[in-house]
Image (cartoon, rainbow, N blue to C red; front, side, top):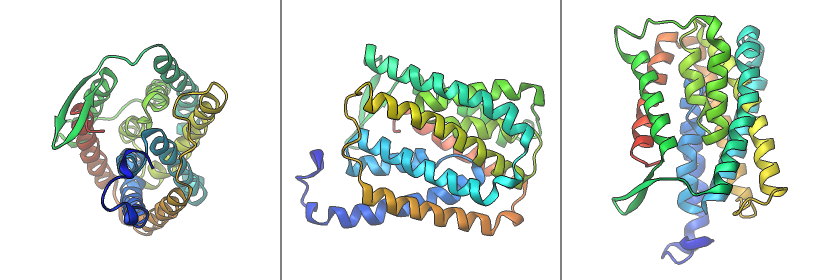
Length: 279
């Protein structure tokens, strides 16, 4: 399929992809269970190695949605209703706006970018990636710097945080990172943090998947999703469910400080990768 069909290991490609991609989904799911983000960011590059980019993006969205739905079923009852309403509803509205903005940008121009080759791979830096990298690194410092990690956000800014994370979620799919960076600073318990993240994440996923489906199938975005690897998606979704169960097993032993460190480290790693154009 695509430019990868001519590689020497073509005959074994399906076996390899059905091992590597579910394994990546399992590891990313465990990490994202505590941090509230990272599954899509870590899984999409693994899928893109084996499939065309449009198919990789569509497959990632399906696995991400299934993962959030399963988390919602398991821990959704522990979500803080105030956070869900005051943060989640603005996030949904902004996710629609961000997804439509993505479609508009794709329709009118290719945008400005800078590319270079690193270890045989073309890395592309766009203004959007650079902006997200700066935002994520700033939030990473808030979580990890000794003098800043104790800082809390007043809950009066919940709506603003929802708008910011929802918009970038619809625009680039990175809503989880900004959402977690904000929610970790509003003084919640680990169980409520995980549950609230799951509920809001599913709400935003549902909003952007509806918009993506409309732009793909009704408006006819180039690339479509005809090459989505159904078997691989099913295996990756199953692996991500196992990751959720593994995360849930140790949730009662995790402190908010540990969640803050996990969130900060992942924010920093993804910020560097985004800023370098690697994802």
